[in-house]
Structure formats: structure tokens, C-alpha cells
Image (tube, rainbow, N blue to C red; front, side, top):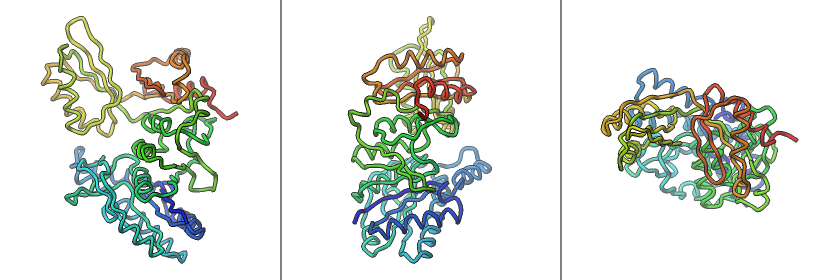
Length: 405
């Protein structure tokens, strides 16, 4: 008998009919003799609706209260799924993240899991229950409710798979697996059968919306096999696993587009040791994630620093950067929300040259200007005008011949 962790996203439990469909899938696996732990997201767009509701009250809500608000969405889903499984004649128990002992740090809205106590889950499993856990949430040691940030239910599922020593973790969504690009933007995007942790880690961090990057980090660290599958059918999906020699034969595995970032530029920062450190320490203290950074030295003993942040943190970031820029006596701060980041990813890039040249050349042919560039061993990212992002994605998908054969 294998222990399997399954996770169902919001689109998979968006209404009563879909919840019953999930219940039938879970019960079918249970009847094959498996122990089942199921992690569920909030129904449909419930989280977005709650965020919008908060926005109608205040533009800068307390992060603690946002966690209190957003954690309620998953609690609805787990209770309804438990009822659906009961209706099919199978025992089930639903739990919140705090109830099953998911302990996090104290950073509200994007907490990190520190520990999971599995005793309550193990007890429920021994009593032949399907265990249903609310994703995306936990609690601090001082009993404060926290949430895990974007896609946090994926993180809950993979972390539970590790803690429970599950055979594997299955992530169910509304697509058949991981594609070479977003199939809603690139019509000939192709499903990938097997992909490495490193590749999907880059794709997730760069805008691919199938997996949460922190969940992949946990999967890689503890070698948890992860399957990404469609909750509407029984196809195999995509396996995320260790890198193999065969994977290196594919130079570019996929392309990704991020449209949820904004660029901030600080002009004429005094060019002296410690200025950049002083600026970015303010962001670290505020727990604001910075993505790409570019520094350009001018002829006036100053430097211009540009960097990108997620749009959902832009208001806080601007509040921090205005104070920080004043402290280092920079001249001004400018924000550009109309940007997009397009990236190519592949473990084969380690052993193949010329990828950057092809990427830049393909974009130049379509007169798509590059604003910022960032690279690693297995990816190259470019910031372009926001109105050109989707075109850039299609151009690069075609340039590296990633479409259906």
C-alpha cells in the first residue's frame, strides 16, 4: 500500500460538480489500496475575490489581517471535499494547515515552512480516512495564522509528501502537464513528458504558472517525484525528477513569460562603496523580493540602479525605495509597470553556446527592444516592453523549434 499526496488547484474545485469529480478520483485511488492525503486550494477565483474585497477597504491592508482573510478560502474547499467523499461512502477528515501542525516563520503573506508535525495525519490515516488538508497556510509558534504566498498549496503538498515519505506527489491542474510555453498564448506549445527540477525551478520562477518555485525547491532537496496532471482526464502528465544525461541533448526545454512585474529605477545614486548595500538592505528588512538588477555608472560620479519587483508588492516597494533613495541622496525614483520578462530555459544550455545570440537576434528581427538582461547556467531572461511580451514569447518558441512536431 502506497501513500500518495494529491493537490487540486482552484480551477479543479471551482464548483460543486468539479468537487464531486475530484472526490471520485480520490476515492478510486483509495479503493486501489492507497493511503490518500489530499491538499486543496480555494475554490475558483475565491482568493482573488477576497483580495479585491480587501482592496475596496484599504490599499495597504495589514499583512496579518490579509492572512486571516485569505486562509478562509481553503477551509471552504476542504470541508466541501470531505462531504463529497462521505457522499461516496468513504471516510474522510478535513483539516486546516494549523490543525495538522504546519509551522512557519513569522513573515505574513509569504511565510516559509519550518516544520510539519504529522501525528494527527498519521492517526487519521490509520483510521482509514482520506485526509484532506487546506493548502497555502500554516501557523507560527505563537499561534498566528500565516499564508505561504503565491501557489502556496503546491508547497504544502510537496512538503507533506516529504514529511510523510509519500511515494510521490501529484499536482492536479487544468492542463495536461508542463508545456514548452503557455498554451493559452502559444498555440503550438508541446507537452513535456519529463523535466528536471532545475528546469522547472527556473520556469516557475520566470513566470510559468504550473508550479510554485518553492515547492520544486523542496522536491529537489528531498528527491520527491512530482507529477503534474490534468484533473479532467487520466493522462500521464509531466514527471519532474532528477536531471539525466538525456535531458542535456535538448538545448532549450521551454520559454516563459512573466507579466506580473514592475521596474523601478533610482537615478543618480552617489557612486561610493556601500550605497547599493544600504538601498537593498531596506528591501531585505521589509521582506520584499527583488528579481533582476542592473547598475549603470554615469559620468557624474553617480550610478543609475534599475530592478524589478512583483506588482503585488509594488506599493510597499515604492514606499521603501523612496525613503531609501532619500537616505543615500539619490536624485529621483521612476516606476514602469508596463514591462514583461521573457525567458528561455534548458539544462542543455550548459554545454551549448550561441543561445544568447539566437535569442537576441530573433527579438531584433521583430523589432522588440531589450531593456534588461539576466542570465544563469540554464536560462536567459530579457525585460521588454509590456505590449511586446506575448509576441516575444511566440518568437522565441518558434526560434528554438519547441512546437508540436
